[in-house]
Amino acid sequence: MSGTRTQALDGPRPHPRLRAARFPISLLILSVALLGAVTLSLMIGSNPLPLHATLEALQGGGSPESRYVVQELRVPRTVTGVIVGTALGAAGTLIQAFTRNPLADPGILGVNAGAAFTVAVGIALFGVREVSGFVWLAFLGAFAVTVSVYLIGSSGRGAADPLRLTLAGVALGAVFSGMTTGMALSNPDAFDQMRSWNAGSLLGRGFSVIVPVLPFAGLAVIAALALAPGLNALALGEDVARAQGANVAGIRVGVIVAVTVLAGAATALAGPISFIGLMVPHVARWMSGPDQRRIVAVSLVLAPVIVLLSDVLGRVLISPAEIPVGIMSAFVGAPVLIALARRRKASTLS
Image (cartoon, rainbow, N blue to C red; front, top):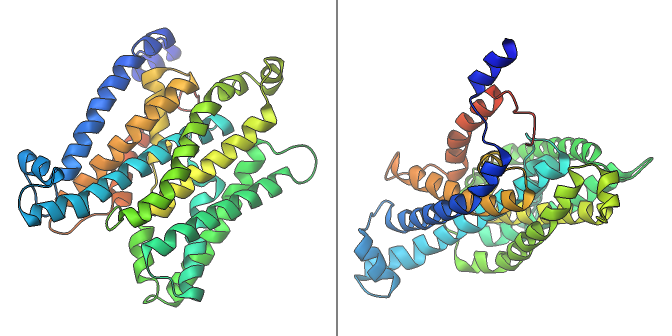
């Protein structure tokens, strides 16, 4: 009786075959939603523009003011949102499948904390003040922390496994977060620019910042798609994966490197943005079933939709001021996490 009651509270779950069958439709709908989110991001702001004026500005027409607003401010901001969302969605999917932990997100390996720490060191020791300087520091910190996590997780007996890597990432992340906070409190004036970056923002990211990061993010997205079949094999257990010819060690290293580059790229561009990498894989899994190839594909389209819409909401809620996208994504993600916690199968990845 209790099982029936619990099932009724959870509601019917779509059959995996049904979810797989509706995958193309879901992807098409999300693609249209992404186009709509991009359009809204180009139109809406402190100086809202109608659709025809936005299209004219994109083509080089219209007033000088509208051309400046669209081409110099909103186009780079929108491109940044798409890159950041795509990177976080793919990273979240990979880390949840790799650790078999439905509550994992890219920050679980300490990537965000490592990136923020090296940015803080650059500000404190080298006087870095511009976002363009934050990018490479954030990449350096992401890679350094990932190498440290892997060395700690693989020390002792046996090879590195997801649980040990997770524990090492959480521990190092806490240490670096504490040191970053200490440095920021010791010199508030010097860290004023970092506070905006640390809140997660798409504002003021020109193509001089975007272009250097784009190749890294693009290659990591391709790697995520290539790793998805291997993650399907790992879901059956390492012994079964090896029997199927999967290179377990190679998949592990590939996932760690891809997550580092993806999360590092997103953090370098926009600062630490939470909840996106955590909630998007769950929605993608519900829409497409347990096949990691489909989950990655859906996440690549769904995550930038959420990032862009969160950014648009942040522009209009307290206009003419703005709420950073990192804060808005938390408001959007919190209800999803509450709903996830109330589900009977929230601890599963099916």
